[in-house]
Every structure is written in structure tokens, then in C-alpha cells.
Image (cartoon, rainbow, N blue to C red; front, side):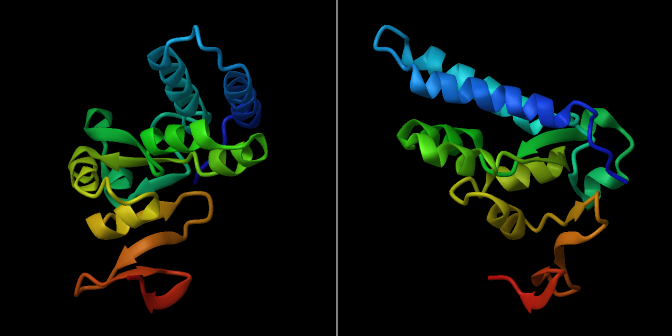
Length: 161
């Protein structure tokens, strides 16, 4: 069962505050590469606020894997796309963008499958890559498949397209 890190919310709040400062204080003398690198690191801080591999969302494969070297911390909503959205966002839109900064622990093989669907954003990649995801806080399967490979959200028993 998932257990949040005792400082999880404080860590997320800190990274969020620093992202907002960066966005508000963008200066022409700051190199774009440095600016984006800092945003990238801060997004990692948010998704790893609880743990690198003991994330709330984990693939079934990751839960069955005993070798940490075969696990990957996946950003459900890809960092590059989030950074692009943050750079264009109005100040009042930043919190909504950061709400989807979510990590999911997957296996190396699942990570490779997911990378084939980088044109998708978010959980759609997992559906297309047929990665079964468990919310380890509730035990609910977020994304699952039947024997035929049809992908479902368990909470709605209708196929997901």
C-alpha cells in the first residue's frame, strides 16, 4: 500500500514555488537552456516527492519486479511538453499544469513501449502501450486490459479508445 513521504506536500510546494519564481523572473540574460534545465529538475522534484520508485502509480509489471535496476520513473505527462506549456502559461494557469506532474514506476520494457507513443500526452500513452497501471493508494486498476487486449478504465466498464 502506498504511503506518502512525510514531507511530500512540502517538497511539492517548494518546487512549485521555485517554478513560479522562475516563470515570473525570466530575464533576457538567462540562457534558455539553463532556464529549461532548472524547470526540468523542478518537475523531477515534484514527481519524486514521495519516492523515485515507490510512487503512488505503478505498473503491474513494476509491482511484480524485485530488481530495482529494471525499474524506471516515468513522467506520465512528459516533462518537455509540460515545460513548453509552462513557458506559454499565464500565471493563473501554472497550478493547473503542475497538477499533472505525476510519476509512475514502470519496467524498462514498459518504458521502451511507452516511448513509442510520445506523441500522446498523459495516460493515453499507457493505454496505447498496453501498460496496466495500479493506484497503489486505493488498489484500483487505473488502466487494464481484457484477454483480447481491449483497454479499460476499471471504474468504467466500457472500452477506452
